[in-house]
Picture 1: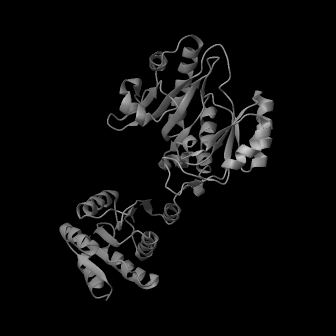
Picture 2 (picture 1 turned 135 degrees about the vertical axis):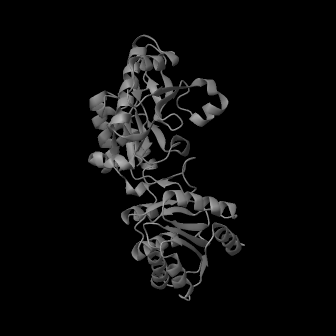
Picture 3 (picture 1 turned 120 degrees about the horizontal axis):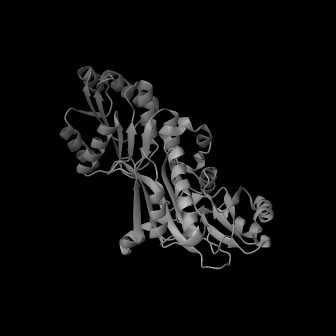
Length: 396
């Protein structure tokens, strides 16, 4: 589950991570009110207005602006709220901005120059350890840094059974070239950041930038946080942070129906039971010259109702030119799935795209008979290769 920047900062701050302070606003007028509140608390007279959408690169699309005085806050917030923000991480249509974060200006003058640092915490799946990735080149796309100056990216692997050790936090600060107060502040920041990642059951913390201020404070100026959905039962307050407006509407509907669905950009809809078989089916479609339009796992309890719901979800995608149903009947009975296909076909009405059905396992013979005798425009196959050939045929 992705969070907005202001929500991620709330979690960080609850674990002792120093953050750029700010308040969220839904309207330009509310932005002025929270800016006044921010001035009373921090003394800031300039304000950073940030679009709150689930996408990076907001500044490049005009979603981050500076208001140089309270008199400019309403105007700047009005430019951002309501816009369709297009960034390198959105579609061409962009994301509609419903709210902004009004944050304090932290690039104030002082005894030293402020500097920006990139830092993230995530799981290194190759080693089974958590990893802090960091670089002195903050504020830039980390992909660009990795491509052009890979020697400026450092990693610190942490055994999750032990946690971060003091020498590891100090090594991060040392590699970043910090000293004095900034060195001490960074060791505290890194330790608190890792604790926040671990205790919140997150799958990603990305802060770009972490700022060393002109008076050597270390603060999180941004926060991209992804929570592990499977752990949300332990964090009811985090689950309430979910913003459904930012999520794919079809995926939200699928989740409500208990289906595992991920929207993709292809032309062949998939309906499969089991994640492993789903991945293999997507490979099959690619090899046949098509592109999977979705990942859809109906699970081991697929009945007629779930199958019908799955069909309706797939058919919401106008790019779908064919549907491949690939079911292995271990727990689930193939004849129940077949009946679901027949019922869905009748209840939905005319389905204009060809449907290829491969049912193997428990009661597969009965299922094939049901499909063949239904009188519907459904292609029944037995072997994987037959399914691939049929996909290729209907797409050509």
